[in-house]
Image (cartoon, rainbow, N blue to C red; front, side, top):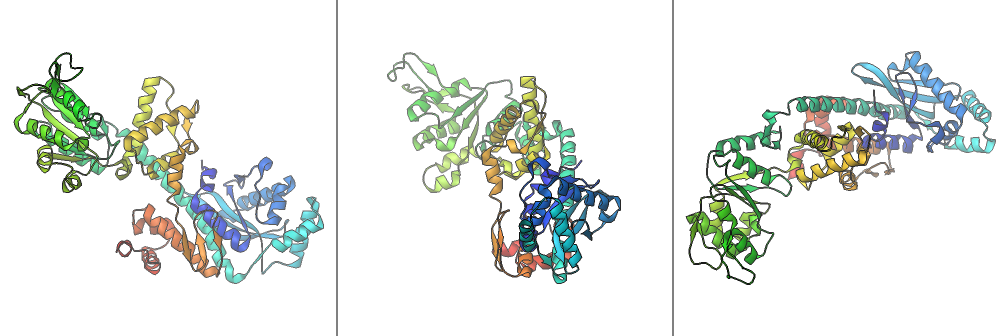
Length: 528
């Protein structure tokens, strides 16, 4: 069953409807495979720009007239192909572009409330009479007729192409949603040990490479440097290394190097002896001594001061340290895993990080990819967090809508996996008793972030960028500007795959390449 409201909200549909309305003052509505009008509520009818159409739709009888017309068009099989029909009872013309899903007629995009050069005086008289029967005054009708445009024969092809684009975009979107849903189902089936490493989840190629590296180093005692943005799961990787190693039965110790100043951090790491400073009322073991035989995870090592870096270098080189206030060195056997979200090479160049310490901790380097570079893992991670919440709370398991999942995969995730987990938890709470979580429940920042991808283009006197765009200038320039915008956006959404985009646009690859060259959209040229 098609989600007609989802199609109505599609940005490109809004843009196409705006062009049709601005140039020809025609309205576009949708009907299903039975001819029933979609997304129109008798009790809460929107205001239409076309005054005649607005008058018709505001009247219960007028709504029924259009409904009868569209149902007859479907029943008579006239709507199974692109066709211009005269809406006899209203004296108006209507263009119908069918929507086929999996080879079957599923509905149509209907553009109506316009005249053509074939419109006769008797058609206008019929419209006048119909509006009088609906209860409108002569003044209201005259005002509406002035507002109603005649589409010239030379413009009909442009008009029809735009209405057909509306139908085509719905067909393409539905195909993409179905494909994505099938892929998600398949991914969920595969969500097992094959796509997991300890508690990490990811099917993407970049994660598979990291799993292979973790397999290679699990029997090693070498120092590891884990680099990645905040929220990418660096501690999770450190735990995976430890619990897959021969030290897995020993202790795993964690310390964030940015949590304390130098004096406190030194005491935490190396311990102190009684009386070494005010408050040192007894001897205290440091974390290195506690971690003896196991693994010590030093998070945010890039925040460590130069003086502390010197002490770290000693323990890495010699395996010894001296507690605060003591003069006797102590020896430990600890595997070090360090992590940072900072660029240590840049810090070395600025004199903020010791080069010798860098090479000591960077024996094995693991670069953790940000979530925006592994978007195919988002459905897996989302499902994992939903399942986790279900088990922890015992509440019925939720499901994400297709539109919401699409938005999750479009978002840039500055907070990475941690942010995704928090968002999923928030969505589950806000959904209440509803089993399906909808996209309108997403955080404001996420909807705002998705909207920032909307571009603004000015070509040949046409300014574009969302449903509020305004057009001026020649019709040919407006059509070309819209075409350029659609191709540009399509290239980005399809990863610059011209074959895939050509198929979705319903044109040949050669034709698409020609248009890409025409509008200067070649990726290599843009990069120069």
